[in-house]
Image (cartoon, rainbow, N blue to C red; front, side):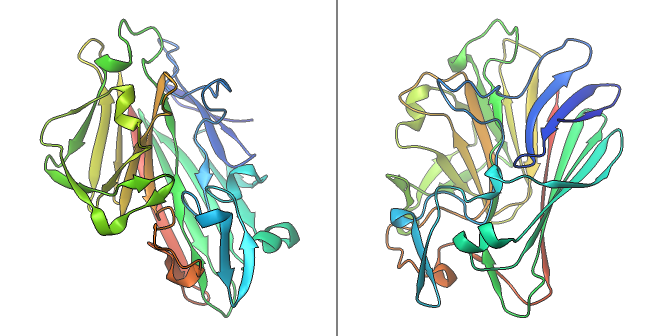
Length: 291
């Protein structure tokens, strides 16, 4: 396990999946991250690559050849290599090998970097195409946060998600696990979104951000602690498993979507897919402030 520490926070990252597993306040020992209780959801903050969400029938095609890949891709279950580390920063890398090519017929280099700066953890991802042919992929993050935060005199329904800028966002509905991008619906977030387990009875709330810098804060009026995630991504998912009464919420920056309900199965035409030309790189980042 990798440990990063400064005067305010101690962070733990597992090289398996480059997964953030703990963010703890040094003074109060408050744990912000979901601790992967298998009764609800056995992960903390998986990295989503080379797809976000689910494929129709877990299948897709490239050049008329079919491949099988399960929800959110394989990076979350692969061992990353540490390529650089200091007391407050670490970079990890995953590259293609025979096992990944059996699932995904592309060469790639995926680099994840975490950096602690005061009360903030910055996450930066780079996807590089080392080949002479185009690379098609999606990328996302899936961090889960305790609700309530450790020791808070509050329960799930005392928490709220505040989105800035305050406005009405377009929400992508999910039909089962699939995106229905043709029937986006407005979601008024001029006021905070009050948490309730039934909010997730049709899976995640998926906001269209259009790449505009957005801050999403998870907090409760009953406690001074919270988190604020800032990102400029195409989409952001808000999720907690339903009908389980799970004591956590995920705030998920996405550079991709689950297959559309009208998906053809061709990866090159998949909804929200990224196309990376030969020898080019793609960058994504977000930061979370813990208070």
